[in-house]
Image 1: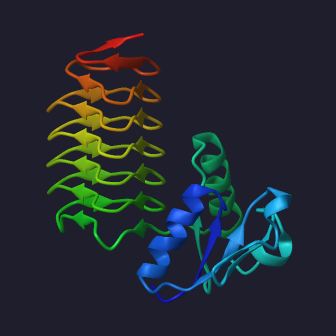
Image 2: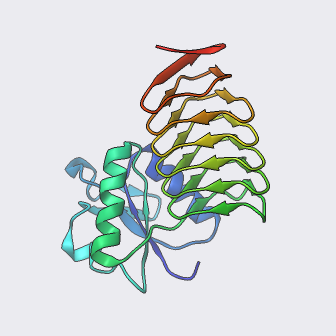
Length: 210
């Protein structure tokens, strides 16, 4: 990546993204966050410059500066991402930890975060603006939508289909061939052995609707 990156969000996710970019020798221009108490705070040699709508900084976005939205709350992440795309025609870049393994035959979108030791199998198709946390596994031929969160250690087995906006908790296991509907939630440690309807919450081993 030739251009520097401006990170939106100075929380734990922002620090994770900052660490990933620095390990990849990507220049981070700075961080923007709406929490005024963080403005001016420094993380190493990187400062929180101002709010996410600060004209003095967001106007640099474009041909010479990339963006990454590091906000855990899905609705806020989506709002910021859509605003960047509409106003600046800027699509956030991926943040990929150096220890992640992504198959050359996998297809991934934009603005995703891949934490340490994430594995993405062959022929998988991943959307955009999702969070794949530490040691999560996306197996062969899985399909994952946009704005999905996959918690640390979760396993999405082969041929699983995950809709947009789904949350999968830490250590959950989705068995092969299962379909998880849009905006569904899977509790941490659950083992999902049946299809999950859109908007529902499943928890347990085996996972059941709650």
